Amino acid sequence: MQERKIEFQQSRFQSENNSFRCELISFNEVLKLSKILARKIKASGYIPDLIVAVGRGGYVPGRLVSDFLLFSDLTSMKIEHYTRAADTLEETRIKFPIPENISGKKILIIDDVTDTGETLKLAADYVLSLNTTDVRTAVLQHKTCSAFTPDFYAQKILKWRWIIYPWARYEDLAGFAEKILQNRPLDLPQIIAEFKHRYELDLKEFELLEILGDLTERGELESIEQNQRKLWSIKQ
Image 1 (cartoon, one colour):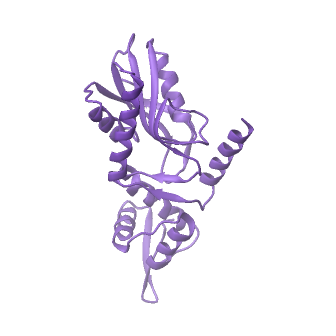
Image 2 (tube, rainbow, N blue to C red):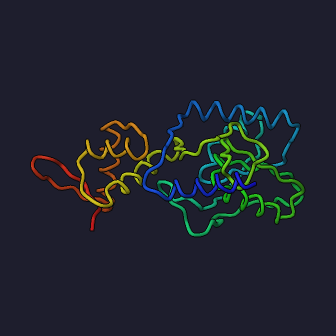
């Protein structure tokens, strides 16, 4: 129990710092993990009446797992906990509740990952409060630092890192770019080097240029020409 508490505190410390390891997950890996998760659920003998995907991270896993289970009754709810680039809200909250009457039903809740575990715990507590008969939880990847352990997971993550899924790649990288530019203007090679140094991410110029362009268009960044170099900075 003490070790688990220490791991949880470390995960929060790492995510609140400006430098921590990140891992990019491909769609192929998501497909593989979803199939493993579906097989584990099937092998357990558990058959839900309804699958609930937790938005936004659980939308794709929920659809894939329901497909591998040949199960068609899928709905969703949206919980807000993380914003961009590993930043968290002060309070985890349900933004869009389940739109169906699920009283008396067996529910399988699916999300992408347990990090702190707050999102999945809130989802499970909420679903239980709706007079359901049984609630199980499932994720693609379960971090051992999580305070909540799901009933099913495809992979256990022992060493904490921030996982970037395909459906959050653009948003997370945009958030990290803003963090990198928080204190001083930088040119493209410097920004790429900072991504490598802070987050262990190797990014291509074309992808980063597109992100910087969108952030500039949104009024969050500004660019200037200085000594024949194009620099980006946070717009004041």
